[in-house]
Length: 407
Ligand code: NAD
Image (tube, rainbow, N blue to C red):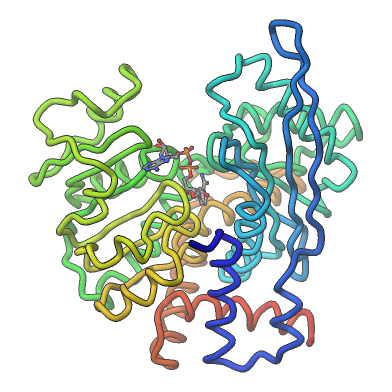
């Protein structure tokens, strides 16, 4: 199996085969501008010193400052961060916001750390990278396992080092520390706007039977938003297990249950299922919202959903894409489907620099037309070139970047 960065480059090369962008331009996107690794020494609660590995990949800033989240995960490594940074470049271009693409991470299981250790680690990441961070240079944000509180610590560390008081060096902060209204639910809400914009054109029913993999920021909020809109959420899962009820789950009660018990398992009136089983359920819409490389050449044949909406980054491998395309299953790609998160991050940065605070209504009123417009353009590209939506989205992004770079 290829690593996520090889998958990302395969996607790029496939697009270059159906539209000629010129070798120079495509080759220029085959490597990041910078790929930096640092050691972060952290004093542990027991008095010992532990060294963690931290990453920042600055992929491309043709459209604006590097922008992209920081992931804390035991499997985080440089090829994953590079792939995520590359997708950020395209995602910002698809959304049409003036930001480039980057990504960061630390190889760590944050659940094994105390709060104090987590704070020292997070401050250490920002200290290590503070020279290359800045509102006009590189603006990180949350990703898997990173929270508004972690963003606040990093922002505070940057302020201590540089004196910057705007807060615009990092997004996804808590509301009282300069965060934007709506940022917490923006990824899922944006996914919903994209879904609504495409639903009729993709021949989906008004009320969709929906299965969601992942029950964190993206997955849980998607489950709440979709079920509030009257869709039936028949299954959800997290890293430990999944739950299924063909008549639909009560998501608010399930969220409460998971908050209290820490697990989905044991919730009444459900059948417990594995993640593999969830991906193979008969449904209208499948929403991968966990990690990359979940739908692969090994299980794509078993997928029975009509449409897949990728709230996670890179959940479908290029081999799986081909299989799904042949089966007539439509994939709404990550760089369109989850671009609501970075777009509201951009709004947060903009508000911080202007000293403004917009209401949630203002935020979503601005977000909706941006995503509807991008979704429409992606669909048009795919139809015109008789290809899938992923290639349609890549083409939109590559055209916008090429126009700016001029090669
Ligand atoms: P999160 O840490 O809040 O949640 C991740 C969820 O996935 C958790 O419920 C976890 O239990 C579950 N999970 C982990 N491994 C799993 C597995 N093997 N099978 C099933 N579930 C598993 O993270 P998040 O912010 O929701 O991010 C999820 C995905 O969405 C990532 O790919 C991330 O890059 C992408 N994304 C997030 C945002 C955002 O704003 N949070 C924006 C764009 C894209």
